[in-house]
Length: 289
Image (tube, rainbow, N blue to C red; front, side, top):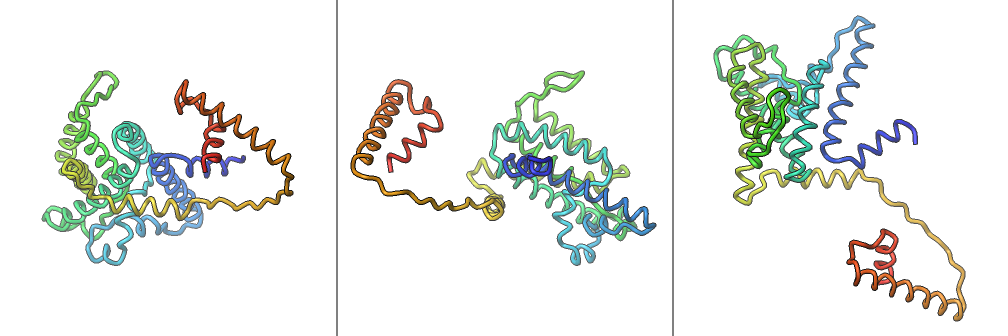
């Protein structure tokens, strides 16, 4: 198996967290490689404008896909490094409490609500009036903070061991992050901090709805599962031809199968079904049908 096949296999067999990281990393590498050719040609690189989320309503209407694409888009190395480290670290803990479908749903819908906070904020507050036309948002930060706040709501007392500090409960990490985002609105990254607050809000809303027995992202989970089935490789049907067997051979094979079946049933009675090997489970399933 070559390197590319290993990557595809890892993506196909990996968790939802692995796929989210691969998509972010793949988009980053593609953007940066293509940018090199535009740079060498002395041409303007247009793809960030087409994939980043604009704060201008009219421009957003003409590029609605940016509400999705922006959350997988990075250009600076440190930006993607810290986002993916946070996503991997918190995503691993998240999957210890909730399933993969919920992780993807929170990531996507947290990113969307974060994007809407950014657009609405820039079009509502007078201080941003002169920036709307030229402002763009990119990065997975809103989606990542949505995962963090959802985790903090679901498992508030889960301890995270921070270097030089020691164990800190998840709820305090989320609260501190949100406080920093509120303060950061008056900084040079006002749009990013507005988006972070939108993502954080979705994490809280999502878990509150789950506690009421409502999964507001059930449709997203269903859509992702459908896409997974659609793009999963279909098993190849193998046709085999067997020569007919005579009665003596048939009875001999049947007796061998029965002896094997008795051995498996005896093993189950002594050690339980979990003690069976994969081959024994397949034999049990085949002979039970």
